[in-house]
Image (cartoon, rainbow, N blue to C red; front, side, top):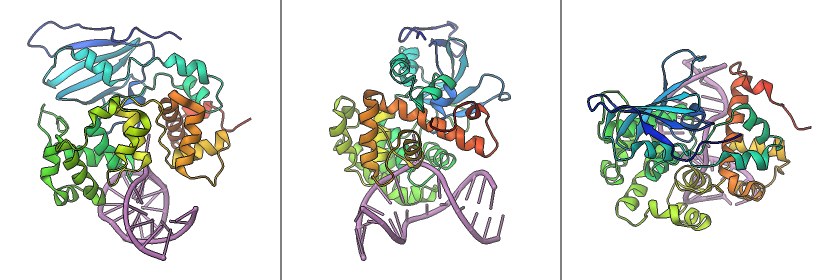
Amino acid sequence: MTLAQPGKSQLSSTNANQPPAFTIEADVLDVGATVDGGQSFRWWRVGGPKSELASYEGVIGKTAVRITEVTGGAQVEVRAGEVPEAFPEVVADYLGIHADLTQLFTAFGDDPCIGPAMTGYPGLRLLRQDPWECLVSFICSSTSNIPRIKLNVGAVARELGQRIGPGERDFAFPAPGVVAGAGEQFLRDLGLGFRAKFIIPAAEKVASGQLDLFALRATPYYEARAKLVTLNGVGEKIADCVLAFSMDKPEAFPIDRHIRRALERWYGLPENINNSQASDFARERFGQHGALAQQYMFHRERLSQRAKRGGAQVESELPQDRN
DNA sequence: GTCCAGGGTGAAA
DNA sequence: TTTCACCCTGGA
C-alpha cells in the first residue's frame, strides 16, 4: 500500500465569491471513521443514503467545512467562516494525513485483532485536534456515551462559541477564558452534569497560563500525562485520549471498557490487572503505534457491538475469535 | 412507563 | 484494592 506525499493538496477554486474547495490527497483515508469515530465530537454526517460516499460537516478552528471522501483522498469545501493562510495544509494536518499508516500495516498486519481491522477498513487515522477542545470533549466523556458527548460539546460551542456560519452547529469552540467565565452552574444547565465542576477549574488553569496545553506537544509522553492528570476529572484514560488525539503522542493508549475487553479477548490480558497496567501492557506491545492501534481496536469493537444489535455487516466478515 | 449502560474519576472505606 | 457517588441521555 502506498500513501500520498504529505500535504499534497491544492486549491481548486479561484473565484473570490465562491467558497474555496480543494482536494487533499491520501491513498487511504476513511473520513467517517476518522472524524466521527470517537476522537472528536463535532462532526455530523450529511447527505444521501449509506451506499454513497459520505460527507461530514464540522468546524476546524474558525472555519466551517464539509469533507467528502473521494477516490484518492478527500474533497474539502469551505462552508463559512475565516479561511486562514494555507488552509489546505491546516486541514491535512488536522486529519493526520502526514502519518504513515504503512508502518502500522507492516508491523501489525499479522496481528489477530488489528490486522483484520486494518484490512477491513483501512484509512482510519489519528486526528490532530486543538488540545483545548479535545480536553473539554474528553472530560465530557466520563461515564457518558458518544451521542451525549456530542450533545454536551455541541451545547458548549453553541452557547459560548463565536458564530462562524449560518448552520445550527457553525460555532468556533470557545476559548478557555470564556468557558471559565461562564461558570459551573451555566455548564450544568447545559446538561453537562458533574463534569461541569471539572471543566471550570481546568479552563481557569489554561486561561491563566498555569497550564500550557500547546507546550505539551513538545513534552515527552509520561511528563505530559503527569501534567494532565493533575487536573481534576482527568485520569489516565482521558489524559491518554487528549495526548493521542491532539498532542502528538502516538504511544498513548487509552484504556476503556471496550479496549479492555478487546485486550482480554485477543491478547490474553489477565483480568485481574488494573487499567494502568493494561495501558503499560499495550504500550509494550504496540510502542509508537499504540494510539493508532487503539483506534483500530476501538473501531472494531464498536462495529462488532453494532453488528450484534443487527446493524453493520462489516464486522461479520472479520474473524470472531482467536485461533 | 421503567430499566440500563454509557470511551471515568476521585474520595472514602 | 474495592466501592460508591456523581448527572442525565438515548435505546431497549
